[in-house]
Length: 137
Image (cartoon, rainbow, N blue to C red; front, top):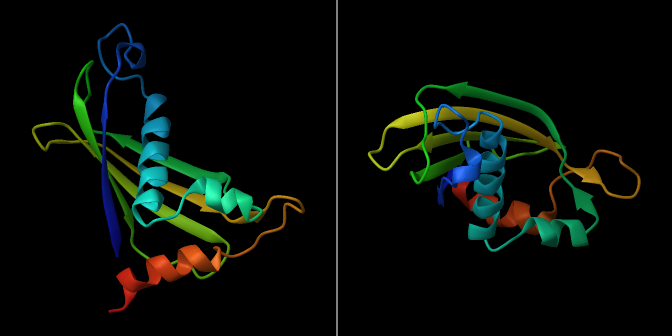
């Protein structure tokens, strides 16, 4: 299993009239967590795109447990429970506040796609090699 943690601070523009983070912003928080988790492996989305692979989202699920507010420091925990072996990758994500309280959970499924042909492909070998060490159980 691979886990990473990324922190973001809630900006005023991300809140609604109820002074809570607007639910649509969690998709962006999840994206920050995914991108930074890959960066922590020494790889980036930009690297993948330069190899001709893109990653569209095909599923996005969220469960809102507690609200986040303006200026809260959030920790986005990103988890890969399984090493991808085909065209799909599934991220599980959890968002915590500064007190360690779980605010939101999510699951995001993306596909590895050839940028030119739009055909499904597998994870780039370079990323696979970096990830597989976390799954040798």
